[in-house]
Image 1 (tube, each protein chain N blue to C red):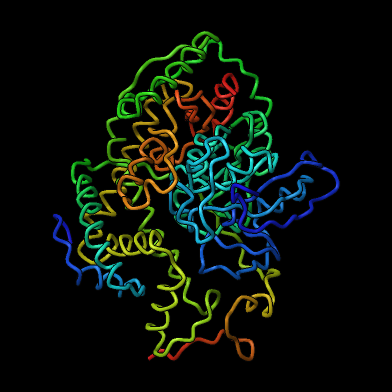
Image 2 (image 1 turned 90 degrees about the vertical axis):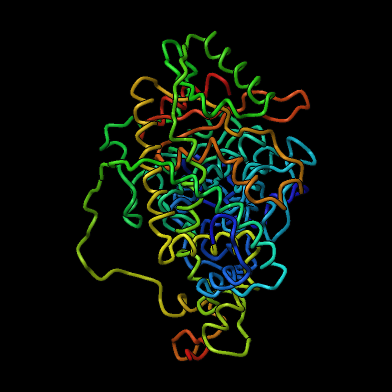
Length: 92
Length: 426
């Protein structure tokens, strides 16, 4: 899926990895656009390797119990819930 | 609300007293408001009502501000024109028929139209500075870590900051003082005082640029529209007349900033937006099939095309065999950009360029060509890659009366110098 050689099956494969269904028209548009965009991303090849300094600080805190959302609030936006749990489709 | 600046037009009252008592703030719709719908401009979150306030919203309320509503934006912050919103485009009050810029277009339009005294936007690759420039107002992208992102619905965590939009530099600085500072809920925040930084932002808006040294990165001026360049140099002349001096600098790394930005932002987005599965929030899934099939169906229905494009490209850039080619090289480019900016800022107080290389586009003009739209972010994205602060201030207008913004970039946690420089113009 580079050097402009983007095929419809490449777009469908990535869409399935990302769990996004696409209609045929979207696939056609993405085939064309991804070729242009990936060609452009290819220019990153010209970037030299750069040593970067890490600037990290320890932000760990003690693992103490704190107030948090209650169960009803946490489930408030779920389309479906049951007995205090999120309810989703069957896994397989 | 004739410009479609708001998605949700609902007032939230703050405390009776405080530095912002009696004043109004419009809040971008990707910032959580307890009990008030927060959509991110997406059909996916059409009905989502957050059960808590973002830290910045709590700080606005404690400062006495009244929130006027939740403003329109490109879906999940992905756009440069506010046209990818599921709630329709916003029109630019300062340039009728033109886009307000994006992705915080509703926030800038609300301020430009006088519908709010201030606004909050978010800036991942220019999304505060671009609409500020296009709408003729002031916008600040703070240093990474200055403002808490707790309660901001994430697009690309390593790049984004919440920032103020206001009619003047002094007012934008005043709002920055209210929202800045460490937060125990966001482990990436730092205490600017502990970094030895001056945090009296509003006091820095004194317009005193005598003796100030301005660096001008040639790469960020050369490719821009002719009238934008002309307006930019006029504003530099203005600063020079007030006692500043300037020199040009080369930043070769910025030629790769846009592609590095998009690879990193899309990669982070592909991971962040995996949470929208129709189970915890989102459209009610009533499809036939197993988890994966329903998940993919909800996401087809809930996401717009630009969001799908970025999730797919990000998934691709992180997939086996391509990670080193795209994501790792983009991280190298990011380190290079940071190095270039740090060097340039060791010999200048601020760096100046046009905020946007083009004047505001006509509505509908750029929707069909994503790559052209991405390239419009050439001057703003390097600043996010370098974790630095920047401000966009009105620099003037083109012959057709379209607003042009000047971007001023400062050193990390050095917000005061760019505020001072900007306040000499607006």
